[in-house]
Length: 189
Image (cartoon, rainbow, N blue to C red; front, side, top):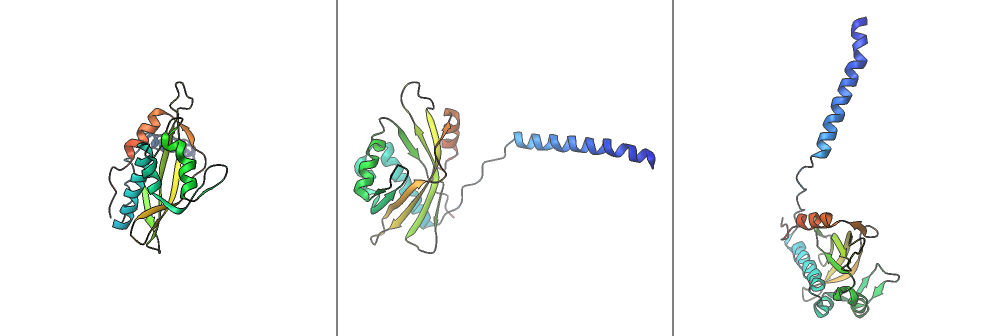
């Protein structure tokens, strides 16, 4: 019995080292990225509308940007909320032009709850500072947009704002990985 008792601490130590090695190895080898959440046909309509909205900014198309706005839109993120489609379009004009900062975003998930004419869209956004030597050149964060379907069936963004605090500095490699992970089409249910 005494001989066995002497080996217990050694055996426990070997087991702990083995467990630590397995945990370290599994942390170093990430698995496949999680599958995009499946969405209904109506949620995919909003997903595509959000993509169109983002494309209006990528194309520097102020008219297309304004067309996505609900008349009573409220956008937060600045010192004061921008209230109304006209104020949002004017306040976002520099972002749409993309001269001092380039904004891009992409929906990852859209959900529609008990009200079939209201949807929530969320996903990543990234900002690029195009100035030579800008540091940081990229920043990224999360957005949340609320969409409202009008009587004619068209979805318009009603509320928009960040979904997780301030944008954080990101490397070019991190932004490339973020873009690569985004679904090209809406993941239908």
